Length: 277
Ligand code: OAD
Image (cartoon, rainbow, N blue to C red; front, side, top):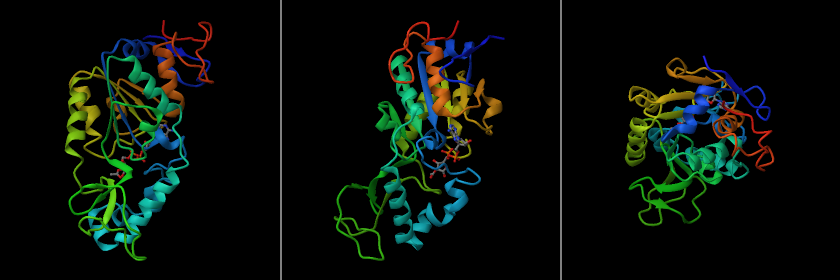
């Protein structure tokens, strides 16, 4: 057994020294994220029993093509209200830690199920959005992204300025396929990575939830960051039971102690830097 790394700047988060070492020496890293990574930015998750979106709303009435066919205005308005709520949300230390990891490993891909755009806002560059992006709007007929439209009739979503079909959010609904190119890129990276970080996802929605299994089957070390256990936990080499806003910065600090940023964003002195032995 290796000693866990304890960092006074990330109280309560214990990073195993073997994990810190594996991350520091990894050549290819993939991160898979879900709604939990944005929870500390005030964005609700889906499956939290009390505050989750699917505890308050029925996904079959809001997040399927047939729901949109039945009640286009209701579905449009629900996504528009989520889009408005997101305007106040800012990336948190978990998002920023993933940017740090991207900067430090030779090859990195962040595959997110989140549609909130916060990873891009934080500065992640090598990013695939598996479930689309709430900010974007597309034509419901041909899928073309549209960024301007006329004010809609009161009881309808806006219409495509080219063909007149309803506009819809550019997100993936239940019963729909993921964008093929995004999924292919994530799957390819999962097959080739030597370490995968799975943060803030219940790992219940496929095909995204299959990516850690693919990585594991191809020999990668898999680490989960989630305060709660998921169906993936037994498969993981390391499970860090903590919020990602604490655990991911702790992971960066443990892997690269000399470079880790302090709480204020300033580089800490060597004395503050605690880390992997
Ligand atoms: P879920 O709501 O299913 O899961 C969120 C996970 O985040 C749970 O396992 C929580 O324990 C964990 N969590 C909560 N707070 C956290 C924190 N501060 N740090 C780390 N983890 C935390 O969300 P997803 O797994 O993203 O799809 O859901 C997957 C997909 O299901 C979504 O993309 C969405 C949804 O239906 C579509 O809309 C297509």
